[in-house]
Image (tube, rainbow, N blue to C red; front, side):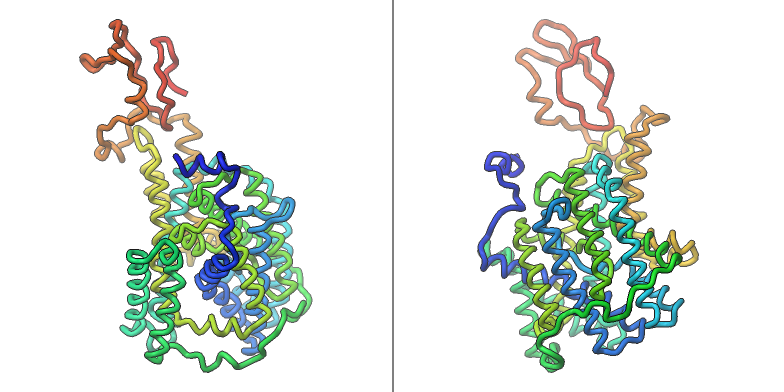
Length: 510
């Protein structure tokens, strides 16, 4: 209650807090370290699938860092009509990897890169045009839906943490070795130890400090390789149209539109999730501004050699675990990304951080996202409604692509593209079921759901007790006031009612 009311009293939103240059640099670097592996993974995968040379793959990575930094600055600081002004890190989206690899296969490797770039530009511009439609969906994202989405984001990211903990590269001989897993466990232990014993400042920096300590330990054991840090140029900049003039093909554009729709769903979920975590208001205008920033960044990125941009869910977890809500911290991280895009040397230093170290930190980061979602779901009313089955079905549906990655292998490609993402799967299911049961109430049973009949406990809310007056008493299951007049007790509707004393002639619900 206090935390939510404070911004209204001071006039300052929690995301507008200014922490100073030193704190911004430290926390911003922590954000960069958290998402660095993810932002370089997509250009690495696409570059290898296209058969590019190591030098060209390096240019793809540099472009992705540079564009991700610019997109992060736009999203956090904002311009008129662009940017949600929330602590969200932007980077290359994983949603389009399979689609882009399929386009490359169709066009014979590297020859498909201009087609990918053209498809991303066209699909992103279409996404920009339909942004107003997405900006009006906030009323369909009550805590029931946002809690499901936040929980699913955390759960779907856990396999990423597990792969990092095992070494990151599944083709490496030591993938899954006790040395890699042990290093991840040691990093996790350092995070927990610093969180327990450190001061408030040290606790907030526990992820960054644990990564530094884990990397130093790895270097002493010969598990971190910094020998190639000085290979290659110290300074470089993205070369516009380095991979050819974009080619616009209808089939590729149509497939990429599906990717853009998935990206918009995921970005909407991330914007709403981080708003929930830091305790700030996210209305339709703010959501629309965030999506516009996403789409304009994605449409410009191909000109510099990058791909679709979206918010990084793992950094939402970092906001949750550190409690640092300032958007200026993330904006500083955006400046660091731009610098890394211009200074490949710094990028190579960060790239030398062992994946196992990232994995140990990732367990806490991604687990915190899921825990934040569970906390949101704890505020949902499960009495005499279908909310429990909505939660169960949506989270279960979101886990299908994680538990069985090949589940949608024989489905139509457009369907597989949408539902291959556990986040978009859970979001779509949660929205649809919430509409079906809580908005389209025609046909709903007035009886308690069988799915919660065996789990409901008797309890009274404090605010209900506070409405009782002197002399009120219960007799034979009925409530009477001091004059012996019966006070009507209404059945609880699907959403918690306002605790008001109703007369006998009051209607029976909303």
